Image 1 (spheres, rainbow, N blue to C red):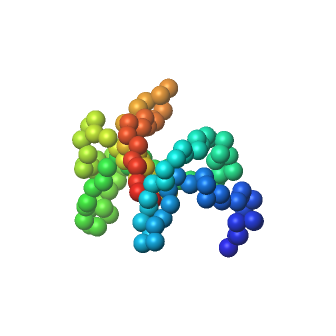
Image 2 (cartoon, one colour; image 1 turned 180 degrees about the vertical axis):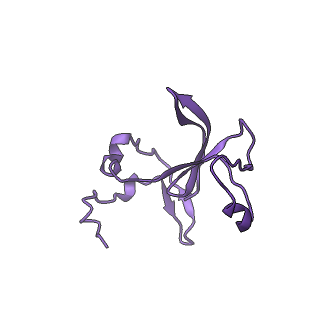
Image 3 (cartoon, rainbow, N blue to C red; image 1 turned 90 degrees about the vertical axis):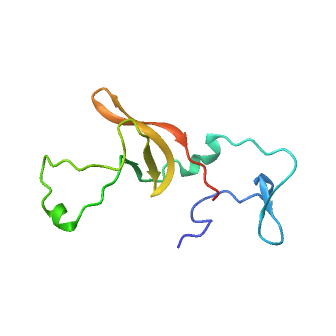
Length: 118
């Protein structure tokens, strides 16, 4: 396993954090100004690969039916036309969006960013 020094990361400065932990381990907001962070602060992770998935919907079918699927078979999904699709990064839901066509290619426009408490 690589150590912090092997990854060439800057040392963590507790003053840069926007919250502290009390004796019970709960997060508590710290008073005072929070330093402004920019994209340049993340420059060291820009080349880290991630997997992005846009899930149009899902369907449950029996194994016997799955074995009969051929090219041209239509599977009904659990979403309706125009309903938002889920966007995952490394298997974690991060956003919802819409399918768009751009210069004869499919794309996704993010319409909602999902915030997590992690």
